[in-house]
Every structure is written in structure tokens, then in C-alpha cells.
Length: 274
Image (cartoon, rainbow, N blue to C red; front, side):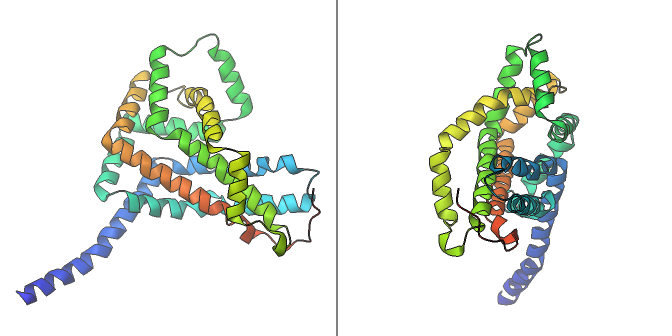
């Protein structure tokens, strides 16, 4: 009996790493099929744009250094590994395989292509032009309901708000790192300041108000049938677990990246207080 039990343990010891690797490989495939990279690629540019408000208030070389640091920590290839590992930890291999079945089906492919294309091409001008055109042909009530359901089931408000908060924290951490060590506020203090300046409920309310028109633009080429299929999947128990795992993985990676900004900055002379 003991020999048989020891043999079983040995077999499990060999199997467990292989199973873990299999889940990680599946998570890597999920990252690719879900076009998560397309969601992450615009973030360095968004970070750079957020620093434009500080032109004239900080030396240009400090802003350039912060932009460069943001490009490094928020780069898609820098975030990818963390996101994949987090998905692998949060989802079972079976759930990942079933989510891949959805993503590899025709509706899933068409929806993902629409998302990837929108993330790559969306601009203030393109959005404004689309919203102007929508005044002549507004979305149907049924379409609006589907978009509202999709925003809810995919936790898009939380994901959007957390992205804004991570970028804002990254700016604050970077600026704090340009101070002399004895004058730095630190991440905990910066988080508290940001919560006071940008109350989480207000950030989420702002994102919630923006998302319906943004999603109308993102899925503008997606048929009602495909959008309805997406809503059914995202609202299913599997879809909810999938959405929770992916959004938590992305939010966590962005939050950790934001506190690494200071590590990427070169030594700079003390800046003047403004």
C-alpha cells in the first residue's frame, strides 16, 4: 500500500508541472485570441499625453524622461507576461479552453477583430465624426440595451476607471521621483492624494457616461446577431469568470507598472517647486 501511495505521489509530482505549463500556454493563447495586446498598446501614448499639462511647470528634460519611463513600464511586451500569468492563476485550463472555443467561433472572431481595429484606429476626430453621423441614424433601443449589458458584464467601467487611475498614479510617482529623497511623498501618500483629487466614484461615473458612445463606435461594424451572441457569452457563468479574470489581470499589471515609473528614471537635478 505504501509503495503504491509513494508511486502515486511521484506520478503527481511529474504531472503537476506539466499541467501548470499547459494552463500557462492556454493563457498565452487566450491573450492572443482576445486581442488583449491591442487594448494595452495605446497606454504609453495616453501616459505621454497626460504629461502635456505639465509643460512649462516642469523642465522639458524631466517630462521627456517621464515619457520614456512610461513607454518602458507600460509597454505591451512589458505587461504581457504579468497578464498571462495572472490569467493562468485565475482560470482553470477547462475554462480557458471553453473561452477559446468562443473566441475561435465566427461571432467571437468578428467581435475581437472589431475591438482590435477600434483600439488601433480610435482618435478624438474619428469618434467625433462617428457621433455626428449617429445624430442622423441613432442606434435602436435594442442595440443600446445590448451595449449596456455588455458594459456591465465585461466590467468595463471598472477596467476603464482603473486604467485612468493607474496612468495618473504613474504620473504622480514619476514626478515624485524627481524630488530629493527627503521630500518624496511615497506611493501610499500619492494614492491618498489622488483619491482626494479624483474620487473613485466620480472617475467611475465619468467612465460610465463615456462608454455607451465609445462602445457604439467600437462595435459599429458588428451585426446585432453577433453582438447578441457576445452579450450572451459575457453574461454566462463562464463569460463572467473570463471577464473577471482578464480585467483583474490587466488592472493588476497596470497598477504594478505605475509604481515602477520611478525605477526607470535617470538621476536628475532637483526640480523647482511649483
